[in-house]
Length: 129
Length: 366
Image 1 (spheres, rainbow over the protein chains, first blue to last red):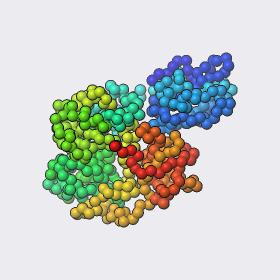
Image 2: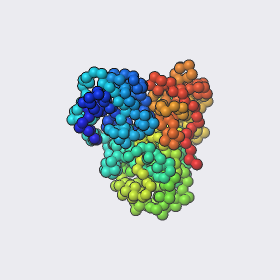
Image 3: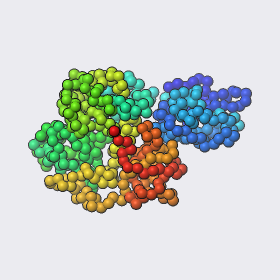
Image 4: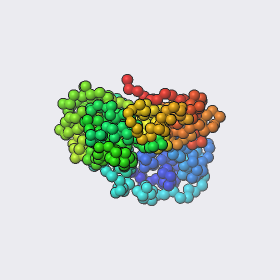
């Protein structure tokens, strides 16, 4: 299962891109491992919209697949600056391209993210699961 | 890739599933394919063309002897003595208190020989109950042959045309819930026109050693799509077919499940559960199994409460999933009989999602 080197990961299987960006805006999605475990994603709901804030470790949405449903947790705290309407309209894109077209939201990070994993640690986590 | 679970059993097709890249899960103690690629594509293939399933985890129990028919009439709720050789019957084995121990398909192989097919998780329960109920009382023998048989299902509107390429057996005249013996792709098979998908289709019982040969031949046909447990579950749900552990349990009677017709109270002789089941037959059940179609996109799932308009819990979902054929989430649920006619909703993780109560099945082949 692919675990891109340049990303950071939460233990709840979200990925975060762009932590070094100067504008402080990161992109968030769910990992290929999570998408595969869920099965085909048929519905995605976000609890908040652009301009709202999310808090690291708190549920910020729900992901519904053919087989099950699971919470989407915010891996960082901050303000939502963008939502990927394309994946809300067609959630299967998350299965097809979890690290690319399947991104879910962008957040302007308000505080230093504490305990995100690097690719190696996340790779170990999913191997053990 | 998770480490192999060495305690789980493997079907004769395990290596084939691995080669096909299936996502394998533990199911009833077996490593079984959940899906090969996309469960929705696998589901659609069965509705429109043909899907290929490995069902070798199911249990095959032979009941043989001069009193095999009488023994099964006593052990099960159906009238198996009335089934002719060459035919099959959907039936159940109940506890003395009327609870369902398993639902079964029983094939009458010969005057004195029946093949009882049990759900994988219940093989030991069924074998032990049959042994206790039959072996001591009747001149018949109970043999668990589950390890010797492999079971491959070819399901879908194209299945007869496809199977006909591999056998000279007269499939044309083979009725639903009938079987015959034949050679399929060069191996001896019991060819049964049964299945669990709501489509026309065949279940092929073969020797375990022949499973890979048969699978590989059938899988090579254009349009035959290997299908996993995930597709199997949405297919049977659309077809309104109960799943043991969900709609049927030891705490459920056949009448609550809407399957009172399988209980043959008029058959000769006593049978296990008769007294209690006869009483249930006279009393309207307190809860009934209904079909629910969600108005929104959230799927009711097993265990979610069903609630009335004022929020009172009046039932529980037994199975639910987005339906690829209907394009909406569907579910089966037990609902208090008085509530089934009113406005209902399902509590989806704390939110009330309105549903429509519909007749089962959700899908019927045309």
